[in-house]
Image 1: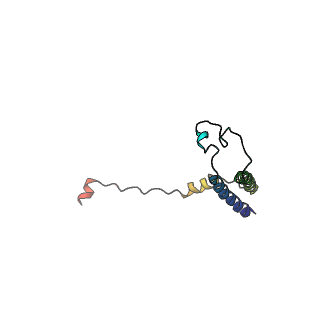
Image 2 (image 1 turned 45 degrees about the vertical axis):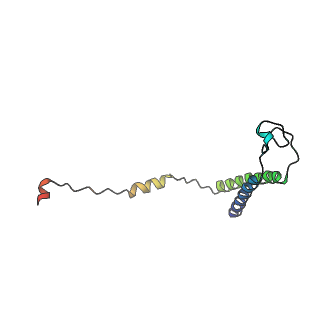
Length: 112
């Protein structure tokens, strides 16, 4: 079940990126750049929502739903183990090895 939701989440993410990139900005015209009240400027009159706008809203809602679903599924697994759990720290302490000590050389030993 988690695999299906994860696959759906990835598909929704890719589609959402593509749909958002296909849209033109609200103030894409020259009037919007200088604060004019054009037909598509930020504070101008708004026409009917286009297909891309409706698709963006739908995909954004699906993205939120799949994100929350994946979060709930992960929480239900009950994985209370963290990266720095106490078991891992104890194992690392047991594995510690001592570094070899360098041999001390004296000037007399080098001559022989």
